[in-house]
Image 1 (cartoon, rainbow, N blue to C red):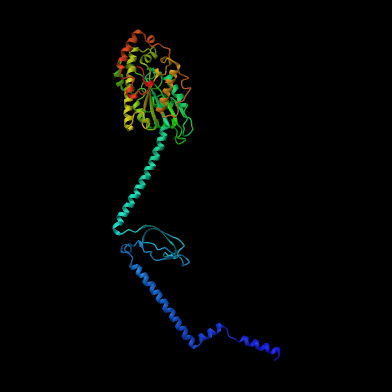
Image 2: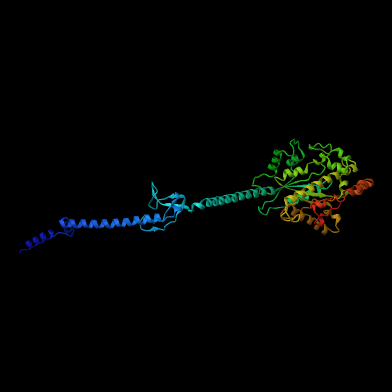
Length: 476
């Protein structure tokens, strides 16, 4: 009854009350508890087996439903089963049957590839049946071949465009004309026009070279050049010096040559491959034009064009001066008889005419359709009439100025240059004060007038050069 006794009894009573877990364990250990546990385990096993049997049946059914054209192909995998991510909860969409063109093994999905668990990323092509497989492969190969051909064609076109740019930016202009055609008066005009040009694409001024030593040695054999004109090493040297590829050919370079036909003297100390021949003075016009030495003096024009046009944009300007003025310009030089000199000069006129005929044929073979001189056509030659530059042939300075500007206009268009504005182009022009009749004398004047008749219809070669502008209507 004391406080102490009551507390002791309570403590003893609480310590001996069994817990729920202890009661459950005690029940399982009893004979009836063991029987009940065995029955529960049997029930769980039974339901588990039923579930697995059902899954096996579904799997077998899915395999039996796979088309024969899929299962017969060892490279075709049936992937209709659901794939699960690592958490095993979120199924991925079912896939169709695919031929595996490539397989990348990753580490995101628990798909066993035989060695390492990972995921399979299919770079695939839809599976085809056996009957269409060969046709599909053939079509794919054809498509690949066409793509490859297009790529090759594009690369070739880019290369050709680059080569054409380099070629266009290396421009050789030969001022053709017989001896006495006033080269010394016209060449400075063309040179000044070239130096006034600025490339609109690059902003660079044209680089202009007149009568370069390396070109004259290659064409004419000057400066003791012993190699033949068609020697590849000689040609390579010319372009290496005149049009170097220091900036991928983007700088426009102009080379001007104006050696006359014929050139030099019979006893000229310069080393021409073929010198001026005394026999030309005693030959007829046709005999000179057919002479092999004359055709190759100072250069064979056909060979020059064929060799150098492969590497450069080669064009020709025929400079024409009235015949009597041409003959009077060198009437007293080298002690040549005027009548013999006339035969020689007219013979070279015929050589130039035949070459221009050849160029016209080249134009027709290289161009398709359109009028000569059109924007899309490559024109190889044009003409400049010296008498259309001379102020004495106009009634006013204004008319002379306008005519000279028109000459610059069509030259600029012919050469493909951007501007014909050149106020200083005619600053060096000086007109001859000679009177041809007085220089030639009455006797020789009569002979020259007769020789002129043989040139009618042949010279100037307007049928070859073209006669579109009044400034191109040269006087004989």
